[in-house]
Length: 212
Image 1: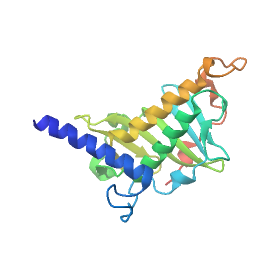
Image 2: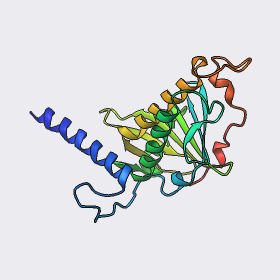
Image 3: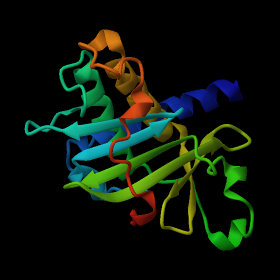
């Protein structure tokens, strides 16, 4: 019974976060209560117009069009762009509104290697760009021992964050859509690039310069 209640609580919390991400209001309040973002990255995600996602040896570059739709920068006409757009928009919104369940100061983790948190190397990395300049880089690491949260680091900060699973999973969904768009069957293959998304690192982000 307790397990069922716990699962119900997680599902309810996820639904609430999704509603807040999409509307910015608390459900059932008639839009009278405005939700204040408290995510690990505030305001910046809504200004980003380019994203570089590194995961599993591949590099995906996404860009926001004049119509404010996110597409694969190298294959804007590939299939699946509408799904990609929705997933990117949700992932960016989650960065703004998803509060970490725990903030770990450097004094708390001390000299522990970042590798212990799955952050050296990271599982996947997201870099946000504003007008061509790297503005912020977020590293996603391993899950905590109970597998209820994920370790996350914002490059340039001493703190580590333990964040709800839906934040990282949304970026995993973005990766899946980006990989589909990059697949040779999604669009006419370009000479010498078929099936090689990892070769698309023409202009890798300078992660070390990305600050809060």
